[in-house]
Amino acid sequence: MMSDTAFWDRAAPKYAKDPISDPAAYAATLGRMRHYLQPDHSVLELGCGTGSTALELAPGVRTYLGTDVSSGMIQIARGKLTDDMPADLNFAVGPANEIPAGDFDAILALNLLHLLPDLEAVVDKIYAALPAGGLFIAKTGLLKDGAWFLRPLIPLMQAVGKAPFVRRLSEQELRDLLGGAGFEIVEDIVQTGLAPRMFTVARKPA
Image 1: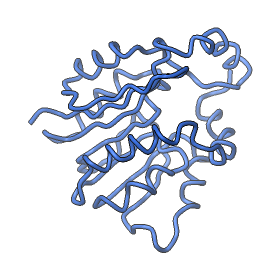
Image 2: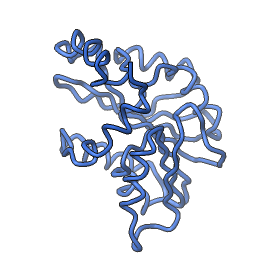
Image 3: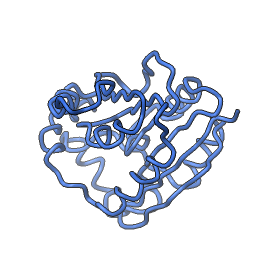
């Protein structure tokens, strides 16, 4: 079976060209992130892909680092940087379970958590890396609450290298996971549909 890193490296060119599947939902969550992220914030985005969201958010914060396990994704993200981009926007190769050194006020994981085999350990590391009052912002697929048509297909697609690891999560399981790590959820938006997703803003208690 193909490793997830190899899968995303191979998928990177097509991923970069694919349009956003739900522009209205993306715009809504982008607006909510801008509400919480402040000009003096240092931000880390795990699983940043080809950097599209980083390019949107970086102008509004002090520093922004996007990391991804796929060197192919990061190569494309770096190729999007231009002279008029913020000088403090950077991209680096790195898995989600390795939090880079830095004093981050907010950590983002967008369309990522349901792709992590070691999800609980990653969330614990994110909690430990944030200061008191720090923000963890995520958007997570809820395969257990929808997308029933994909469930029997995923193992078959994985077997032939057409899909990465995907974890079946429900809304309640995600809430329990964040709460069990110590986070307080301050905002959540469940975006329903064939493949529902949950946008969450969680805070490490002061």
